[in-house]
Image (cartoon, rainbow over all chains, first blue to last red; front, side, top):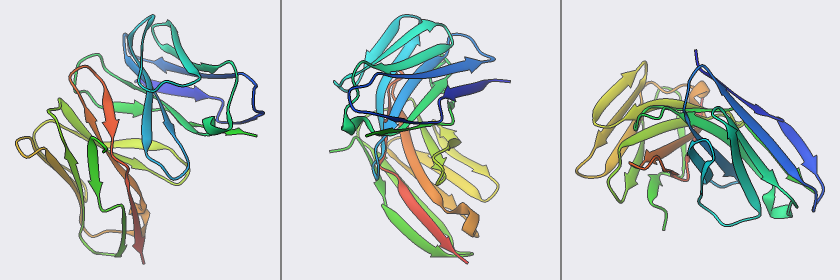
Length: 113
Length: 108
């Protein structure tokens, strides 16, 4: 069966420090991969999506970046965190076939202090 | 203006009541998802629709492609249904956009 793992689950980082959130998918190949952020009291916002290795589409200009070094690995990074980066980050995947259901990781709570 | 509009934003119901949450979108899509987010943050997909109607237990989801509108219904609501329900639309290029969510509270 397919599974998705995301880590770390929670982290507290000082302003200006780097960030790395990792997401891996098991049990499928060539998934579409997504990073979302949910700021406090707000809806989900698409940050990045990827339809293949090395293919990253960015939706919102910001100080975050994403990479897909392997087919089932998706990494969200920042060189210098801002206070406004605090929020709940979710990784998700769906099949490469358009219209298939989407599966979410457990989420990562980031607090920038 | 959000591409995906959900209503109501907040909903409080008594146990046993029939609940409807609505979602409207502005352009053609390939599929629509109804998601459930619990207080801990975890999200699960309830339904994926491209046409018609789907039912799972006490949950029913419908979509009208021509009117660009979908509804999520909960029959015989229960306190454990309390959560945030999110409508998400999937475009042909695999881009996905979300509604702001509906916070449902079901009181015993």
